[in-house]
Length: 137
Length: 137
DNA sequence: TATTGTTATACTCTATAACTATA
DNA sequence: TATAGTTATAGAGTATAACAATA
Image 1 (cartoon, each protein chain N blue to C red):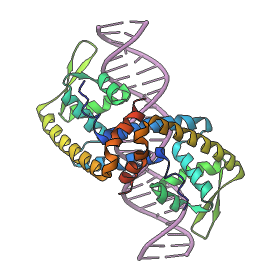
Image 2 (image 1 turned 45 degrees about the vertical axis):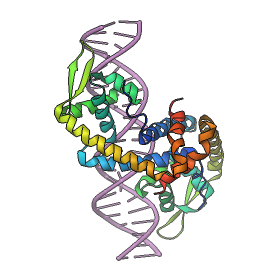
Image 3 (image 1 turned 180 degrees about the horizontal axis):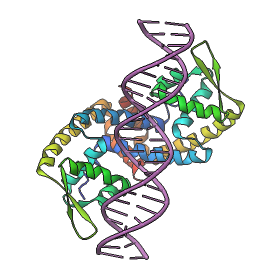
Image 4 (image 1 turned 90 degrees about the horizontal axis):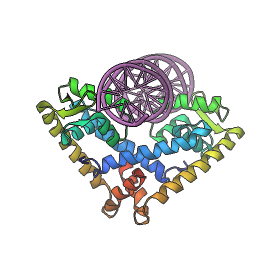
C-alpha cells in the first residue's frame, strides 16, 4: 500500500486532530457534554458576564452556532443569562454549573497531560508554537 | 479576556487543524471536490485496483461512508469499479480522472508547502513526528 | 463464520442568509 | 448604520446498526 499521504503535514495534522478530538469526546461523554460545549462552559466560568458574541469571536465560530449551544447549557441549569442592556446578554455559570465545570476541568487537564506525554520528549516544546503559527495567520 | 484554552496543546491542535482544513477545502473548491474526496482519488490513483474496504482502513473511516464518496467519483467519470470476485470491487482512476488527479496533486503540494513555510524554521522538523506520535497510538 | 459492500439513520461541528431589536 | 441575538437551513465528516451476498 503506497502511503503518499502519511508524510504530508496537513494530512498528519488532520488525522492527529480527529484522533485526539474523538478521544476527548469519549472522556467527556459521561458528563453529557460535547467538546464545544465543554470549551464554552469553561470559558464562561473564567469570564463571568461575557457575551455570546465575544465568546464566538474568541472560539472562532459564528454567532448563530452559539445559540443552541448556550440554550442547552442554560436548560441544564449550568449557565444563566443576564441582560446587560436591551441587546447584549451576559453569560454566567451557576453554582450547579460550577460543579460541572470543575469536573470538566479535571477531564481536560488529564486529557492534555496524556496528550503531551505521548509526544516524544524532544518534540514537545515545539508542538504548540508550530500549531499556533498555523492557527494565527 | 482570559485565554485559558490557548495554551492547551489539544485545543491548539484542533484550531490549527480546522483552520488548515478550511483553507485546503477552499483551494479544492474550484475542482468541485471535498478534501475527503480528493484524498480518496489520489489514493486510488496510487493504488490501482484497491478495494473500498482497504481504502477505509487506510483512511481510518467506516466502510459505510465510502459508498456515497466513491459513487460520486464514479458518476463524475473519474473512477471506475471492476469486480475482483463476487464480493470485492477494485477501484481504478479513469483517464479523465487522471487529469483531475494531477490538478489535485498540484493543489495539495502547493498547500502543503505553504503550510510548512508558515511554521517557524526551528519547529519544522518536529512537527510531523509529534503529530504521528498522537495519531499512531 | 468472517468479510464486502450496502442502506438507513443520526450526530457533531460549522457555515450562510436573512430577520428583529437595539446601540 | 452597525451590532447582538436569533431562526432556518444546509453541508461536510463521521458513526452505528443491520442486512444480503460471498469467501
